Image 1 (tube, rainbow, N blue to C red):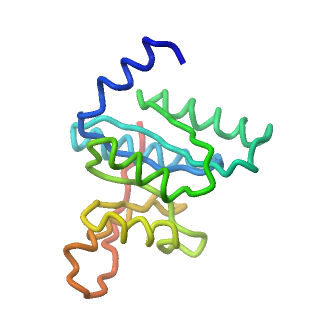
Image 2: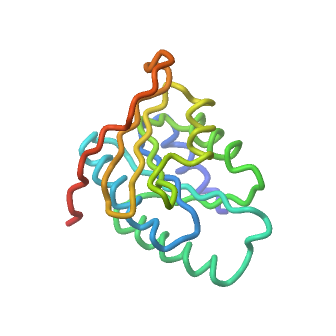
Length: 163
């Protein structure tokens, strides 16, 4: 990494952002597009982050991440890829490092909040989270700090089409 890239990266740390958490799947492009719409609506920046296990170093993973990197660049977003065996720890550090206004992630195959998001919400109870299902619908999850022990179903609202 060049010195110039390091300094520019540090310059934007205090600015509010929407963070999109992606895996190595091409279908995560819908998350980046939804994140770009939310960031534009909120008037904040956009960052994309992916945490991969050390064992996932391979050609197919690289091609998929390159594709997602291209989608992120279309929307002017910075994409960071970390290799670590504890994604909760890495995403948590990334959220703390940035002025995160909203975290966007995908749903599980059944359309529900997965274990990773449940654990992340417990670790960051005031953090607003939106989940994007395979059809592009946003599930706006109420921060856990404001539910006061009551189980609330997520509010569904359709995502608008990208330009």
